[in-house]
Length: 249
Image (tube, rainbow, N blue to C red; front, side, top):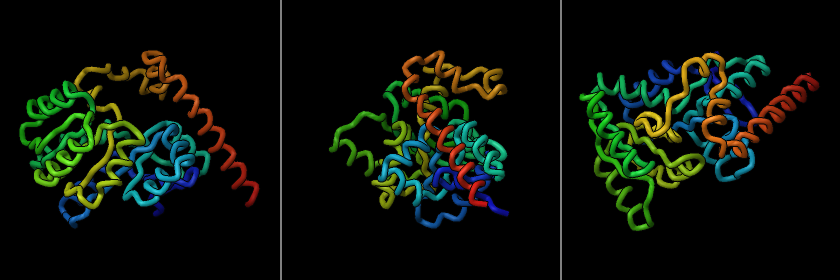
């Protein structure tokens, strides 16, 4: 069975959310001494990967790329190699905290504002008492502080490193320090900490069921208008890719 589908030069995993969680569980059990780098990619980031050579290189060397967006799932159906469901950084983090509570895993939270980062650590301690918060640091730092952050992560040796620096900075940061990161698994979560801690309201379930989360975000955050123009670019390029492939067959 082919567990990947290539869309715009990006190899997306076709694993479900729970299959992905099980894969991570196994990676943590194996503990091979190399961090397992996961990238969650939505249509906007897919376009970034096409246009940013550094990010493209990082995506090619990533251990797993999950489909973080309805647009990715729809594109896979157009290619007749359907992805069963999207796997977002937000959902992945919550499921890993649940399993981590059973396994006694340790997490390090890096990124977001100090108040949000601190509140996230408190949220985890309160709701997942068997999860160890190995360490934390906000996403505002200078070069000297960055060195201290890396040393702190090295010393704390978390099972999972969560990076909330936004895209593409999170994955570029992970890639830069990949050889020094002792975490068994690491991935960026965008603004997930803001949502989990209540700084940003969660998308109502009705919008999720209608697959219109992007529209809800557009309404509550008008500043996303420019970013979401890239959704149209993705849709056009994905469609052209399918038409070109079919014309060659």
